[in-house]
Structure formats: C-alpha cells, structure tokens
Image (tube, rainbow, N blue to C red):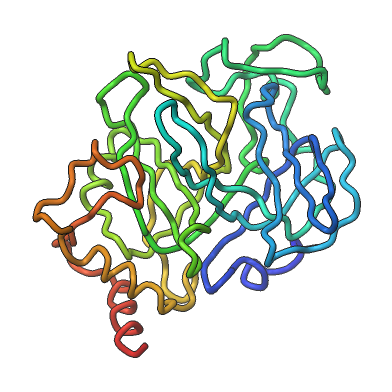
Length: 316
C-alpha cells in the first residue's frame, strides 16, 4: 500500500508535488472500458460530492468499486476544461478532480462522523442543499461537528499561470483569490486553487507573480456554476466544478516540493513579463478568467527557488 511507502516515492508528478488522500462513501461509480469515474460523498449534500476520474494518459486498472461502500482513494489532483453557458455566452472554467493511484478501505477515523455528515458546509444556503435516498447515518439535515482533517487532504505544488480576485456574492468586497496552478505543458490541465482569506487576499493578489513556484495544502471541493440574468440575479445551473480550497499560499521548496523546472516556464515568463498591448494592464473586474488577467512583475527580492528558476531557465 502507498501509505506504507515514503511520500517521496509516489508524491510527485512531472517533478512537482501532487498527492491527495480522500475518504468517504463511493457514489455513482461507473466503468467505461478501462476508465473509472464517480464521486466520493462526505456530507449530506449530493451537490458537494468530490469528483473522481481518470486522465487518458494516467489510466490505471482497479477492482470494481461498490457504490455506497466506504472507500479511501489516494491519488493525484488533475485539471480539465469545462465549457458552460453563463446566461449570455459560452465560457470555460478550469475544474479539478481526483485521479486515483490506489483504492483501499479507510480506517474509522478517516471517515466522516454522523455529526459531520449532517452539518451543512459553512456559508452554504439551506435551500441549495440537495439530498437523495442514501442516508448511512439517518437523522436530520443539520447538526454539529466538523470534517476530520484526514478525510480530505490535498498537497500540490506548481507554477502560477493566472490569478484573479474573488468577491462575495452580491458584494464588491474581495474575499479570496483564485490561482491557476500549472504542472504540465498543456495549460488546459492546470489546477484551480482558491484561497479564501479576506485579510490576505488583496496582498496575495498584488504580490503573487506569474511564473512563481508555490505550494498549497488544502482540500478538494466543488462549487456551483451560476448563470446571471439581465438584472444580475445568479441562479445555479446544476453544474459543478472542482477546485483546491486552501487558507494560505506557501513558497515551494527547492528539491522537495518542485524537483525540476520545466522548459515551458519560459512561456509563462514571456507572456506576463511585459504589459499588454495598449499600455496599462486591464482592471481585474474586466478579467472573466484568471488566465486572461495580465500581471506586472513584482519588486520584492527574489526567493532562493526563484533564483534557481532563473538559473535553470538560462541553461535550457
């Protein structure tokens, strides 16, 4: 089992840290040829189930996963592009999902408790909670308790390839930032990361530079895609996209979180190293997607790993 091996033996992909451990109840698992997909349910809300899938180039074969059984999946977090209609036009979003390395039986402490199961997600409106007939604990919709940390852990490192501010629903207050974290040459495989911390969001938004190596520790979650009508009223479309939720952004450690610097980092540095045509960068409110938001180079001193990036890029 992977849990018996050192993290260094399986925790990196493309030279960058990427591993997740998620436990819960298997839901709606299907097999299409040799590809497995489904969800892990951790709370009594089917719209917040964690998506599980397999990338075409990372397929692994697993024994059948029985629906509604307790399951623990150790895997990678991968990204893909989702296209949807926001009420006025077709737009694209980065969406994260869990790609299994190993499927096993969880320990008791790795499963959500009955209190956790019946506790609504913080700030989740009660009228948006959806349930079905699967009730492993019974009881009411609401209760007290918290998700055990072991049930949903994600650690990923990568290169910043986009950032935008997040504002509260119906508000003009910055409550967080979304970062597009890239680990591969294909930008469509980038992982969306959301740091929800209103006190740090503006600082992170101003200081985080494109091409910077970072590491985050968080959880794999989903959010609703919402259409906006002419009056600005938001309505959930019934679609969800995955993302990595975290509380802070950390510097990636050279030789540990990021082992090697890929050549495609040159493209990111070149793309964001100069102002867009027309002079001034566009205001953040005009940027519908993180990858479209132009950035300026910061003036802070380079960190050791950024010096290493410059050195390695010079030798490419």
